[in-house]
Image (cartoon, rainbow, N blue to C red; front, top):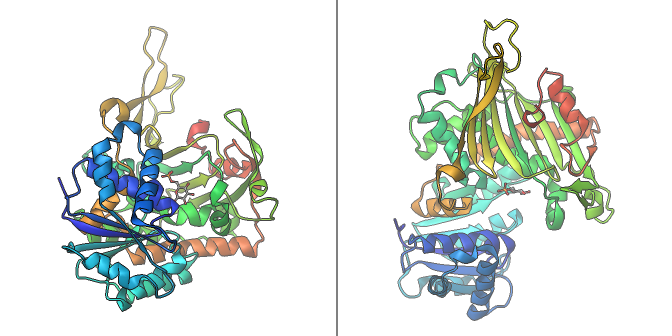
Amino acid sequence: KPVEPFDIVVFGGTGDLALRKLLPGLYHRDLDGQLEPQVRIFGAARGTLTREGYQKMVREALKQFVKEADLERAKVDAFIERLQFVRVDASGDAGWDDLRAALEEGTPNDIRVFYLAVGPGLFGTICKKLAEHDLRTPGTRIVIEKPLGTDFASAQAINDAVGEHFEEHQIFRIDHYLGKESVQNLVVLRFANRLFEPIWNATAIDHVQITVAEDLGAGERAGYYDQSGATRDMVQNHILQMLCLVAMEPPASLDADALRDEKLKVLRSLRPIVGDDVRSKTVRGQYRGGAIDGKPVPGYLEELNGHVSTTETFVVVKAEIENWRWNGVPFYLRTGKRLPSRHSEIVIQFKSVPHSIFGEATGGLTANRLVLRLQPNESVKLFMTIKDPGPGGLRLRDVPLNLSFAETFHIRYPDAYERLLMDVVRGNASLFMRKDEVAAAWRWIDPIRQGWEDFNMTPKLYAAGSWGPTDATALIARDGRNWYEDA
Ligand code: BG6
């Protein structure tokens, strides 16, 4: 179903995010008939470029980032026709009036989206310019994306600077993980099935693991990444958002504030990790050279051309939520670059049965486990203990009830950005972070990073292609548990 017609201005319109994700995402929505003919797309950037030049650039990008089968000539041409280019100097005065003129030409659409696909240093400046040059309309929305600061104070500064010119309901803070099909499915699984909710608590659940593993290194983004590290890059946003969806109380509805109120409560219930706990509840790692899939890959420092860095490319945090539902249930969070494969999942490990009647029977763990594979190969697996079939005595075995999405649904999965962009147009903020969530997440992260500094906890090296430093295994083993794929 088409969304209301809109105008979108992409600042950083010639940049990586725009060309790799945003414009291909808009193209796909167009292909599916969601964009009315009146929709207009404006690339804005500092460089000198003609409209034709920009159209050519985007055409190339589509060729590179959209599957060939989806590139229908007529559709591509029609999409390219929507594009205009405006040269704007984000921090100076040049171009702003041209942008206003371009937007006001013809029949402007009521909905006006400004997507700030630029560094956070420009968020405040651009908002100020939009106000000064009279570019805001009642239907204006502004989209920003991480890094939303590097700590609580800098995040507040961004929130304040943007908030000075836009109302909170106009501000859409993207966390692209919330746009993933599999992450949304987590909410459906929890709240559309009668089965889980009664046992979704400390009575039945032993612990939770959230892993986001990547085989890629910091690579071309090393400049940004080295200032950030795994904790700021992945834990503060994506992983904590997923933790919230696993741990929150049932919201009354999917209304943006109903949902975000519940997530906020989780963030505020996280037990602070301070002092000595930083040593026992966190692990930092950095990859050295190694091999992935048999191919040698360089270490992180080599990618930085020998520049000395204590940035972590791997992190484990044992998080605890201080409320009735989750008392005593650790959430082990783990993410890293140059791990053996790209692989994200949430594991809900249930407790074993209170008393086993099977005496000497061998095999089986008699503890259920729900594994939500987020990517790749989205699936939901519920491990059950069953009788190993056959005449030879009573043996137990763990087997999964396995719902593989690829086998069940033969459709293309929209990229996270496609869904989120359409939600911006619809004005639906459910899948976007509210400013107090961002602040609460930083408040929990900051003391951890402070602890690393105080204790001089530099990252432990791990070989590229391994599951991180041995400390990561030791941390969970101390609790008598292990990481799911090691099982
Ligand atoms: C981004 C991080 O937010 O998420 C990257 O900055 C990371 O470092 C990426 O690679 C992972 O996203 P996805 O969708 O590929 O899992």
